[in-house]
Length: 140
Image (tube, rainbow, N blue to C red; front, side, top):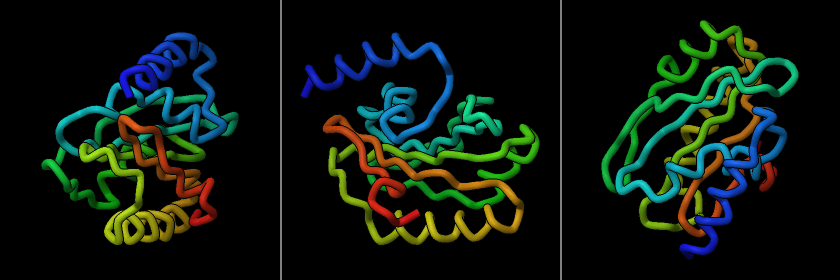
């Protein structure tokens, strides 16, 4: 477990292009949040070339829950003139399964993304055991 986290942190140090083109890139970019003791809901805004504009913590929740509203996600994305966004949150429990609430908020944010013209590229769940990608699983 510690070995995996160290490998991810090393990859994050090597990560110099600031382009995110996969869930693995997103995980490497946000690895520092994988082992947090509270849920952190995160946003990465991207330009049209998949270059990172900004990484933000949108909300810090409790041990097993983080409530987020679409306006908290899309306001900074609109202000950044983002072409796309990646959302992420950590699971302090270490589980890599998406909860029903995770699926529901992803769908809600996907609907809002269509309305505002910003592509929701992925929702990545981070943990000390790796990551789960809604995009890789065909949910997005």
